[in-house]
Each structure stands twice: as C-alpha cells, then as structure tokens.
Amino acid sequence: MNLSRDEKHPDTVTLFLSGGERGYLKPCGCSEGQVGGISRRNSLLTMFREQGISIIPIANGNLILEMSRQSEIKADIGFFALADMGYIAYNVGQYDLQLGVEQLASLSEENKLPLLSANLYRGTSPVFEPYILHTADLPEGKITIAVIGLISPSHAIFAQNLDLKIVDPQGVLKSLMPTLRESADVIVCLCNGTTAEATVLRNSFTMLDVIVLSNEKTDKTPSSLLTHPLVNTDVKGKAIFSMDINRDNSGKFIVKKAQRHLLDEKIPDSPDMIQLLELYKEMLSAEDLVEIPLDKQQETGPQFVGSAACKTCHIDVWKSWKETKHAHAYHTLEVAGHETDPECLTCHTVGFGSTDGFISVEKTPDHVDVGCESCHGAGSIHAEQPEQKGYGKIEKQLCVTCHTTENSPKFDIEVYFPKIIHSSKVSSEMEKSQ
Image (cartoon, rainbow, N blue to C red; front, side):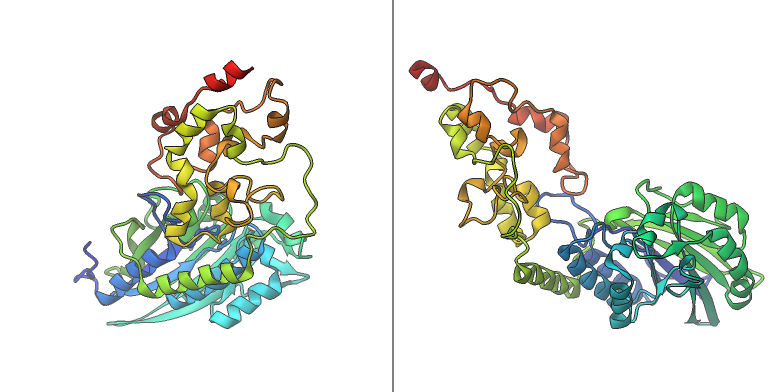
C-alpha cells in the first residue's frame, strides 16, 4: 500500500471520512473474511501518520443503532476510540439521539470531541455546534477546514421524542455559507440523510467542497464530479474513505484524489484498540446483560424445550445435527470471548432473550448452541402433541437472519443450505414402537 505524499503537492491534507457504524465496533470473529472494526481503522490511520501524511478524521454519526444498556456501553467505548484516533468532529445522527442530549453532551465533553448539528434545534437555538473551523499546519502554510453537520427532516420523530425539532437544512446552510466561505479554505458538509437530499444540497450549494453521507446504499467510489464530490461512506464500519486536498496552480485548495479503504484482514489490529475492546467485553460481563430480568413476565404460547427433547422421536436427525457446526456454535463464542455478549448469543443459542430460552450454560444447558428450535421455533406444543400438523416448516431465507453479510461474508445459501437439510420423519425405532 503506497501511502507516501505526492512530491508535487507538499501542501496536502488527507480527510478520513467514516460514519454509520450502527453498533459494529469490531468483527465478531465467528467466521473468516469479516471486515471492519475500530482496531483495523486505527492501524490504517497510524500507517498514514507514520508516512508523514497530515490526516484529519471526521465522523458522520450513528455510532449506535438502537437504545439499550449495551448500546450505551458501545457509545462510551466508541467515542473514546474516535477521540483517541484524532477525530476532530462528530455529526449527530438520528440513532445517536436515542442516547439523549445530556448523555451525548457528556460523551463529547469527556472525550473532547465536538458534536455538530446545524439544524437540530431546541426552541430557536441549535442544540449542538452548527460547525467547527479546524486549522492544520502544512509545509508551506496552513489550511482551514469548515465542517458542518446536518440531519434530515425525515428523522423528525427521533428529535420529537426529545422535544427537539429539525429545521430546514437549506435555510440553515444559506445563512451560514457566507461566514464559512470567508473563514475556510474547504467546506465539508456531513449529512445524515438520503442520497437524493444530499444531491439537492450539492446542486444548490456549489460552494460545498465535500458532502458526506453514511447510509445503507454505499457507493464503492465517490462521485466523478471531483469539484464537488458526494461521498457515501460504508455503514457498519466496513471501510473508510480518504480524500486528498491540496493546492492547485492558483493556490486554491481542491479535492484531487478520493479512495475507499476496505478494512479487511490484510490490515493488522491495533494493540491499543484491542485493549479497549477487551475493556468492552469486561464491561458487558460486569453488567451481566445476559441474565433475563426476574420481573419479566413469562411469555405465552409455545416454550423452548431444548434439542434433547427432539431426540426421542428424531434420533437420526439429532445424530446428524450433532455432527454439524451448528451443534458447536456456542464454542466459537467462548474462543472469541463473546459468551457474555447478548448480540452474539442471539444466533449461537436457543431462544436467548425469552424467559424460557438460553440464560447460561449452567442454568440452561439444553439451550446451548444452534439447536432444532433455533430454526423450527419453540417446540413445547409439538412435543406434547406431535400428531398435529404444521410445526417446524421453514424457508431457507431464515438462514440469513444470522448469516448476514457482516457475520458470514462468505455464506452462500445455495451452497450451505443443502448441507443441513434433513427429513422431518420420526426415527424408524420410534415408528416400530407405535
């Protein structure tokens, strides 16, 4: 990987753009080929810095996806990591708002990481800073970069839950542009919205030098319009974009090069981030988030009974299952140290999250691993009334609820599904006894 600075342009600064992690701090490690993670990202940034390249990392928000105690822990770890990697600003996303303004402000203050949102208002004033001006020293002078944050009005419900409002982003930009253009050499607009909304901003405000999106539909390369590039970073931390900015012959700073860096296994893990992620595991374990609250009401309907209960009638199928990787799925969590991570247990145990599902190896040993009921559903009624029709039929698309592109990047349902197909008939020994 050639990281050295272009000798023809000594006054080069490289922006690093990321966002939309949505809770993905690292690959879970349960299969090969997984990409992303703050550890590899930090290593990549370190590689650039060690080559003497001036880098400016900027975050486009949505570090979390949903509100839970685990998400709060992720936010603590994630904000610390971003600050440690030298990020200069963070545009608040709609999912971030689930943490609440006070908690976000606390994370910002603790980590010295400015939060931006120019059009998120409480009353007549913005809740966070509309923009920042960041000045960097270069071999032949300085560069001042303005970073402004916006959030789409389509996310109004997240703001309304906090008694906030999202005002028209175009109106806000129109009022700020004269000041930004006069104060900055380059203007970067972070936008938590759709590609269509960002395209309208690009066409309406040609003085914006870079517009950054972080949504699900990720472009592999930036727009070909290098005078006003529109970049859509990868979600879930899979990759990070770099953009070189340097002077042209007239002395004006322009975008000259943009590149997507996939955070794959070729990039080593950062020892500092590995240590931080170990702290994350320890925090999860200390919180004991695996245990179901005692006051949670018992769920009605079929209950999880464990794969051993299926063995009585389906001995041949059970023996076949015992030879599959599904029957050893929990062990992969133990190897990776994720046995106390609720998000991992969902796909490596039976019925986790239900009062009758997996709680711990000691308390619910029959619910360890990916068992019969992981695919066929809770089986208590079927076990009591096996003659009733209709239980257990599944479609192969069920597999991709766990074998996602993030967790199982090499998973091919047409290849793997035939390997776990089995007969639904009862064993011959059971048939003879009836």
